[in-house]
Image (cartoon, rainbow, N blue to C red):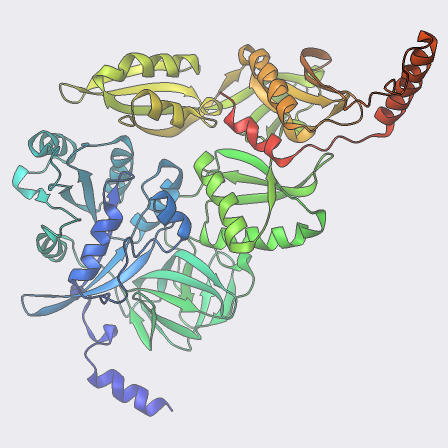
Amino acid sequence: MQRPYVFLYIFAPDFHSGFPMNNIRNFCIIAHIDHGKSTLADRLLEKTKTITEREYQDQVLDDMDLERERGITIKSHAIQMEYIHEGKKYFLNLIDTPGHVDFSYEVSRSIAACEGALLVIDATQGIQAQTIANLYKALDHDLIIIPILNKMDMANAMPEEVKDQIVDLVECKREDIIETSARTGMGIDAILSAIVNYIPPPKGDPDAPLQALIFDSIFNSFRGIIAYFRIFNGTIRKGDRVKFVSTDHEYNAEEIGVLKLRQEPRDILGAGDVGYIISGVKNSVEVKVGDTITNVKDPCDRAIEGFADVKPMVFAGMYPVDADEYEDLRSSIEKLQLNDASLSFIPESSAALGFGFRCGFLGLLHMEIIQERLDREFDMDVITTVPNVSFKVFTTKGEEIDVHNPSGLPPITHIDRIEEPYIIAQVITLSEYVGPIMKLCIDRRGVLKNQIYLTRDRVELTFEMPLSEIIFDFYDKLKSISKGYASFDYYYTAYQNADLVRLDILLNGEMVDALSTLIYRGHAYEFGRKMCVKLKELIPRQQFDIAIQAAIGAKIIARETVKAVRKDVTAKCYGGDITRKRKLLEKQKKGKKRMRQIGNVEVPQQAFLAVLKLD
């Protein structure tokens, strides 16, 4: 069976490994959300005939329904294109990246596997905060930047003004900026020529020991875990015995290949190639994104460095609606983690919700997307608790405790101080919205650090503020205040002292731990009152009164009552002695009291989600 395969390999020039590394280009696309990145990728795939007319659909690399519905890229995707330039065939590996601030980890993974980046900027909006953040990541990895001005066909495009911004940011020449319209296809040839001419071919030694970086992985229920990798040194052949360095597990390379629109098997891949490996791995813990693959016979001496480690910023509990689905939820989250390495989780239990997991996310949108994917891809119905950040608690005994969950807070008498994470937030906006945005940030305990006018009417504001103040609805409010023009990015700085209290919600004197939250003392009273009012609307009426209380320690700060569903027991008394009516009412009162002692209050799922939507 081997002979025809070898025969094909020698004579078929389409086999990738038959070409030198000089003909390979690995690049990614950096852009703010909604700047036309996915549409540009579509045009590149069309121009290089990687997809046929029959296979074409808008945003072809956004293969999740969720990505299409929201118009955002959630997952980074990799695809190989073949392009003829001046009579030579080049292999262009595009590793697509998301644009939203919550998926910046995906961007760091793509950048680690590339030599160059297309910096796509919207000619109608100019440079946005997220573009700057991702550009700095690319420059840290010494990537070659090709600046592209997109949406030039729009009537409200401002090419000269935006070019000034790009020249200031990238320090390039004006003539180096490629004017394009991804919608109409204008300038696509210039982009492909620039990729070949300016982005350097990958460096590496095909004869050195194998050293490949895993930048993504997916789960296939028939074939196990499929890992996507970029080879930095060495060569991998089908059937090789390989080892994953950080887990120290060994596998057979049952299938290797390149990533076209579908996976295409190959017999051999060399330095500079981007491809996939199927080795029959069934346990998701054994494949770590950022890990190094090497050969068992001739291993490399060290793992690949420079891969950003993920730090979850927002924590929330996820519990199955049905307690019997706990193990199903675990396996679903593990499979999702394969595809999204920025998700972290540990088991936890709650008196109100039973057994579940405390999950770490990069932001609120990330949390929402994970919840949606659990529902769509794994048919898992989950209850999510109030999200919060990680706090450092210093006890009177001098211990330091990381608290991800309000229920893990020690008794107040044992706490010396609490520290919370702070961020540096950068907001780029039009000058007419500076006042309302400053008020929003200062109301959220922000401190203005810097204010720079990028152009005559565009301002960059820099604030230092607590992370806990932006995880709820800060981004939504910022967008509505600025009519959608402001862009926002942040990075973590350090922990600082905070005046925080634990706010508990009690139903008929019973604490609902899933609704507890750690909150700044100055905001606790207002938040507690809003929570009680919202829960009163959502909790269905019972046969007895339900007292909803917000408490800080033993002190009740707000209360609402869900009135009982009453039956008119005196309806059958027409006239007659008042004592007869009183006797019936007293009998009913005793029954209600007995019912309240043994009755349970069911909190609907909307109540847990409503907390996120409080104004």
